[in-house]
Length: 476
Ligand code: NAD
Image 1 (cartoon, helix red, strand yellow):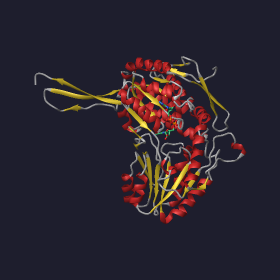
Image 2 (image 1 turned 135 degrees about the horizontal axis):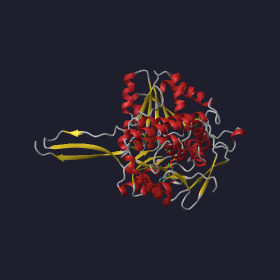
Image 3 (image 1 turned 180 degrees about the vertical axis):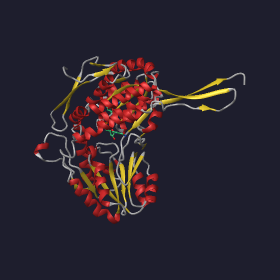
Image 4 (image 1 turned 120 degrees about the vertical axis):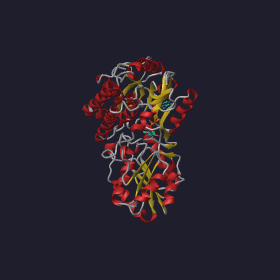
């Protein structure tokens, strides 16, 4: 176990109580990946106690000082962008430029929330002359943060920065295949001056470490980003504990293109929507609804642009072998359902990519909205194209999904754009460009895509609760 990545608990790198490790796989080559410590409930207990012990001091630190420390984390993340991006790409296989952008995004979360440490404030309520009543926004205490493998550091920062800014302490658990950068974040936080115990990381598998975090009595909230089945399982445990959750789950987001749109730009965006990070993005636009009058020519443009993206160059591998196999299963399902692969639908056969978990970016036509390929989240670069005749039909098709994370509308008619955007059952809708992402924009889902919100000022409220205090006054 020499050289294995260790937990970060109470300000130091520590091994597991029982010493087990896991050796990962490099997704780009199939070679040996990082060796990672696998924790158990005992390690979660250590981390939760450390976080609890640090909670009082962190909460009562002058807010300006808390903000300074969070801003310092943001600066250090930026200063270490190159090494962090290299580590992220080593774990995930994603192109270095993408990793760099995600690290810079992680820094932005800390910069943004560093400036908002004073924001979770209360109100004074005018009730009666003999009462002084006010509300306080208090931190919840120890927050558990459980993250997936697709944007490892970025998503850890997305939840941890507002949780810490609101005065909570954190026990984080990254996916076991992509743990390096979350541990690096803990080390950086320590170097930036965060007191020991404020930010802890426990490594390991979901059923052991993740479940132990959700069950731990000192943990007062869990922010979970991941799949629907695991979110549901966490929800069942949380129901018994009456534990508040933020659930950021999957998606099958709809992108609607009307005939009057800037079709050249819309085609470029439609391709970006489902191929960014090789489609391993919860808010990927993987259902493309196109007005029937332009359906053929628009599909042809999307297919042509998709063919220009080369696996191993612009498009990285599936991050895990399991995900690679899942995508190939969906290729078979689509074929059995009678969909036509206009491009892709297979793994690439270039010898240089052998061993890596690559798939070809894939566009299916001949799809109806009731097929599994149109309903289930593939989490790979796989798009279905479906024609529509009217605005109402487009909205009905888009909303006919168990998910509701994101949506896109492309049209030159601004009134129609707003009508459609407001009619879509989705947490965020993009008009005339896909996926405007900003730390300031609240992000979250409808339906099975989850509840609660990350990002923006909104997220801070999810990491606090409100207390009302009334004081009886005499002499008035
Ligand atoms: P996953 O649900 O398998 O795992 C996510 C995390 O949960 C990992 O850290 C994992 O170890 C842990 N986990 C697994 N089983 C657990 C259990 N029983 N109890 C507690 N924790 C457990 O998800 P994944 O396969 O790593 O990621 C892909 C999924 O994440 C996709 O469905 C994707 O849409 C979703 N996702 C959502 C968002 C969002 O913001 N909405 C962002 C990224 C990914």
